[in-house]
Image 1 (tube, rainbow, N blue to C red):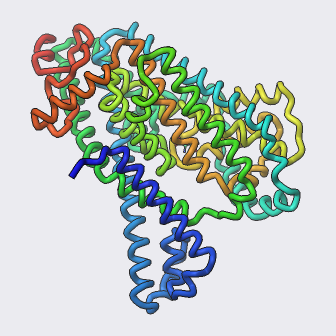
Image 2 (image 1 turned 45 degrees about the vertical axis):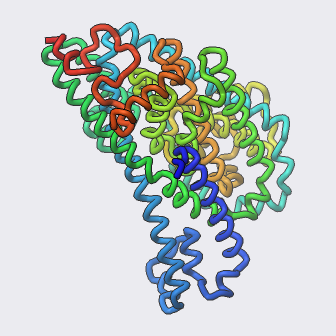
Length: 501
Ligand code: ASP
């Protein structure tokens, strides 16, 4: 039987999940479930939250209700398990691979060049993304599509949720943000998954390793290199279940989506999605065309598993291990570049979130009949850039950070209630854009650093591994094809390490 490529498998899982989700949503909202005697069990399958004792009414409702409930629980279990595995992988993969990456750059000038390029491109594309969002929102005027009654209704329906989001938004000063980059205790940063702090800790350790005698540094680097391979092996195994997990993740999201509210906010949602598409399928490929030899097809074929997973999970942090795998193994970016650019991107580069915050701010202002001056819109570009940097790569944080943007131009914060009803759907779309942006920048940096394989080299590498029976293991000794920086103690065979002795 011909083997279906992974990205197609995931796409099939996603499509099936959407179809099943819509089916449950329609049957549930039209009360059909009640009619066929499945009742609450179907609601449970659709992800509705029940108190423990409320689940019991269907206990005696027969085999259909029982099966429905069991399928719901099992689906939820698979989705949660997959997300846990990804979260389990995220911190160690950043820590280990970045220590190895930084220590093998072996040259502070190169590290700061890559760092400068990475952060520079991230900031410029983010500011550009917000501008695209603002342009779309000003031209399409989505605020006009929501009637006065609907506005009042939304404020009532989502008012309480909005208040809790407003409360969740802290007010860190710029100095605090910078200070917080450095962990007081690296182990705490690791234990609590403070990704940016983990990145800084790993960089410090990696750089320090290049400054101590190679004899001492060698075994330490070899240890982290080995651990990186272990983690990547786990990623590969986890990825095999991705198509099923994507199905399991997407069904409850679609099944519980309020179609009414989606209808009311459809113009706003379409504006966000259209602007995100311009970024993902217009601007990013254009940047790639200018700075790299990576074409449209090659780019999207390589990174589609990460995009689809980002869409299903709404979390760029959870998607991180897969994004790294896609950039390195499928796109052919060098490991040193990937292990720096992608984790930093998953933490600070949120083009989709920033764009969405731009559209949301203008939309809410329109609903309050407020006019935003050019100065206001420039303030939005600035604050949304900063807010997106501070947004953690987990579901729904973009809307919490929106509070900062609204505050900066005096838009009433309660206005968040207008857009909460469609936030999950837009979160899925903006997270895909966030991850696509990380991959684009990784390709640009890798290409300008001459650490990007050609498609032929990527294929050749995969073929060689298959022939050697290495089961696509990316880091088998000697499998690396691109140049190791001269004097690198970390990469390649044990012989490399010996050189340092
Ligand atoms: N869910 C987004 C991410 O993980 C962040 C957000 O916009 O809420 O990238």
